[in-house]
Image (cartoon, rainbow, N blue to C red; front, side, top):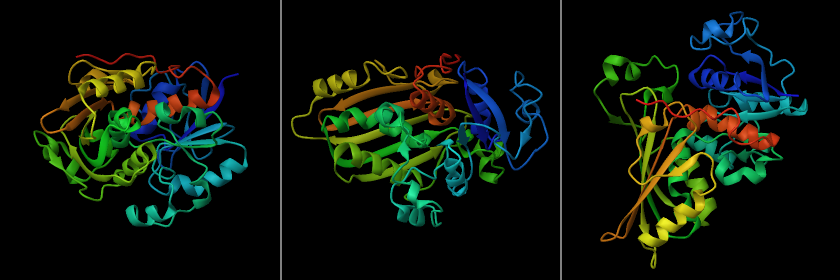
Length: 340
């Protein structure tokens, strides 16, 4: 029997991308679309690309009999609802930020609220599938990574795990405007973003502690992390360029071996022979990684490109669902990128 799933927060970009993918997943049945607005309207009218959604799938307030709930909600909202759902025997895959950080005090510092369910933070599994798939098999709460951390961590992971780099790390990343969601702020209007690139959120972007936490988990040391995100005038796509000083004894050959070995069997991460382009991931769950060694300066420069709404959100969540249920991780995610 297909697993019954619901999307809570079905009217946003991430919710719409989840629905697009889940409607074609052979082992998932989308039984409910939940949102605060547009209730009573068919999902296929609310999300204009979901022509294949049945007319009976109407936006409502009840997740029905779903076994797994995908939450795509503002910060703090999923954590308020999750305890009751878990008590009912459901599982939660949160695309938001509510379970990514392990220390509840970090939510006070970075998100300016007191976490409503701190008891769940130790239980939640960080859902970067490539790094935590063994723990996902028994998870009840999955914290889907942020889009910037997904690219940054996949770019750095082989070097960190092989102990090839020092603790001083710089991440310079650029994302399309869909990463901001349905936001009508002036900063995201066409006339503002067209033909313009701008940094934001420095030095207190909310993805900073998430990247630092997972880097520390891989290296065993607290990093000195500088993270600078930029908004670029495109709809989809994200690229992270990561800089780290090489440790004594590390060189180009060891770096190349570490990356080739780390991702040789990964279904969605490919080490490319040239610099990756965001457009080469469009609409797919692929992450394209490329690593360069600047020998004169003893520095690793590692790149990762993803579609921020797929591998950076909905696709990653479905990959986690597959890992939890014992399905092939590629199930429902086989689509190749669009080009041009």
